Image (tube, rainbow, N blue to C red; front, top):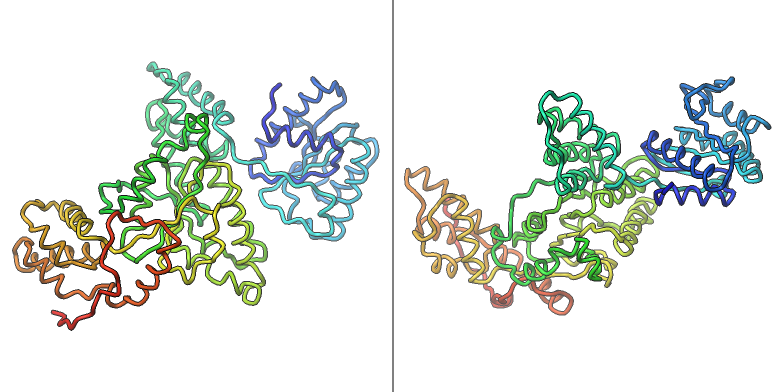
Length: 525
């Protein structure tokens, strides 16, 4: 019998005489099925005929593997632990799994019972498993409990659940349902990765009900979005922007195009390393966030918006658990893109964390940095940043990101592209406008400012019962005070800093900030 990686790891710990093992999981039934497989493996391979499995919950007490109750119900965890310690109740090699006892581990009496079980079971080749979705093991019993994590199911583990729903749909349907092709099955299973077994089975069933027995991967993706929103920290983004919606940034686009297929099996077989991610730092309003969304569309990957502020919770230890959950879900969604907007604000206060929040921010930041450095799954981290001054220096070290790109003010050619993109998006014929004149006139404007100019011109033209033309746009350009003037010192500092530390995302350089001069403007209201 072939065991999964988790089952092998759990069996190794059992054979190493670990008396008490904590398993972090929210899937009780999946863990139970794994334990059944381990018992069968022990009987087949190790020839341990006495191996047996028992489970405990506060509602049912102790039951055996076939759900037959034992004589003692033991509804309280302390009574259950005493029952476990009773000599002769369980044979050598037995596995006893208790669900939902993590709430009681801070109790000194419970801690002593756990120590007693560890000492007793280690010598008798018995194993007590404590299963829970959350674990905060007190220091008093850290050396007595070995913590393992049951990660979310892979495509191979989800396949039997898909086949179960497909078979059920065929039996219920009066019409003949076409057999899923290998390509369709692969797409469905890939869409379901990140869900638990129960959630995936519900999603498969929901799709079958909605589509007369057929399984549609789009329904699975929509259901996964609903489940991810329950975390409150990761939010799936629906992105329809492509590189055609991004004016300029040709160097960045070229770099990303070379890595478009890097998450495929062919790339791994070729020996390509798994990309870690990119950091986009630059002038606000120049398309950093838009470029990240375009990556997801071009690569055909889901994108998860990581709201770092929601990680930090009021309860002690909750913030650390939240960042662990983010990492778990992101890796389960692999391959995917993890999007962190305005990184410098997300981890602000790291340096003073010890004085302001007892080191919570520092610990969360450290855990995220370690994962960013060591991760082996295809979670492409794309972060944006507007200022290097608030950016923790640890992010700039090699190995955190593959590259750091500087996004500058758009050049004349890039401004021309931006005007064309936004005018076309407003259903206007680009050839009716003097794009050359507009791109020259809009020198040192950001992409966001150009978009706002077009929107404002539309409002005024609509009020005049006319359509927009060059004159409307030129007047709006004359009335705007560019960010390049109001933040000229900050942009100059940013450019000076980025010159030797980053790669330029723009292909053509623009006028140096030192050459940008403010001028008197009358704002027309």
